[in-house]
Length: 296
Image (cartoon, rainbow, N blue to C red; front, side, top):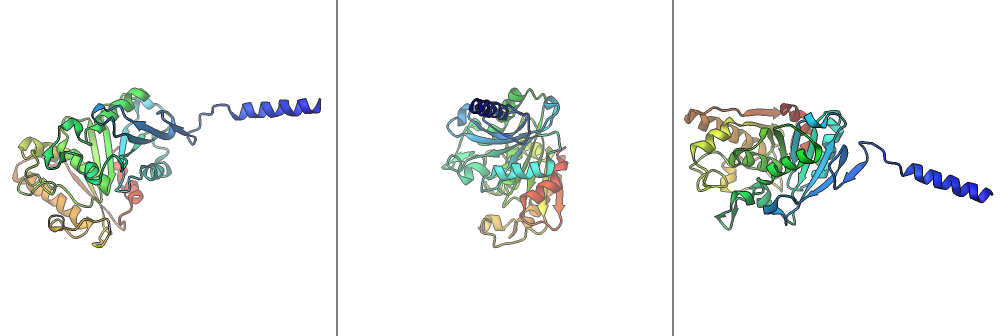
């Protein structure tokens, strides 16, 4: 009798402990929904063989109206850390946050930061660009969640900022609202006299439509004023990148000032904003905290 009672209590406890809970702290895998987790995305046909991991956080609330932000991590592709930083600092925001992991086994450094626009100096079709998957992911997120917003924003730091500013440069007719490019290592400056990838010459995108689109975009160039180490082992040094400056802060200042100069020379609207974050070096979380409100 006592044995049967113990077994009965154990079964009751086990069943109760297995009940589904709506807890935003419980990780969810392979399905977008309230809470946080990871979805492996392969629905974009041109890049189907190169999956992208979506590290997401969706708070409770009216999902239909929540803004969407895509977060692009640095060269370590540590999207999990970027999402953790978001949840630590912005969990109360009613925003769908998705940190995009382009795995290194599928996307080389250049395929990530330069968008896979070229292969062996040959231009690839736009649908094969890494940049092009963003629009497809936006449609996927809306379809899976019932979200009804018409635009998304981007935040990228370091290598992610390289992705972001080149996305803004070369991708037109998108649903992008605003973009933060924070502490990029080097830039594609909108100068048609400078050879790609440091400028636009021979990129196939030297026309006024490209320039007016870029300058008219809501691009926030965010710079930590202590990101001034010229010996950072992840910082590129060659003649072309050093022409932009010897460290990230100087290069960001150069990129912004050249954009402003070239837009004025062409009588084009200039919608960029420069944000200098004082006392911050190459710290993605600090840059995120200080700049994310420019997106919403």
